[in-house]
Length: 125
Image (cartoon, rainbow, N blue to C red; front, top):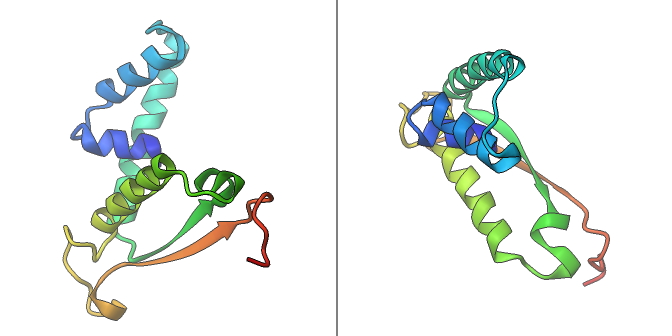
């Protein structure tokens, strides 16, 4: 989802996504193997965006160990999660940027949330 967010934010410019990731991983070096990988990634990203536009319902998994380390909310993780949820809200068919389907309950996309357990959080509190 992070890569899809970058791709969408760059207006579909794969070279911008590729450059950002290449620099952060190994100083910008590219190979023929990388070219093949990125050609495949481009197709996956385009297909993912098309799929989201045709979808009005999805599942989002929240890793509570990342969001609530040691039982305390981590603001940076919350901001990242909210950014992803805003993206999904606009990308899903029936989101604010799309037309609302007649069958949508409540007039918009439906996102089901599943949370993993954070082992350091006491379930009794």
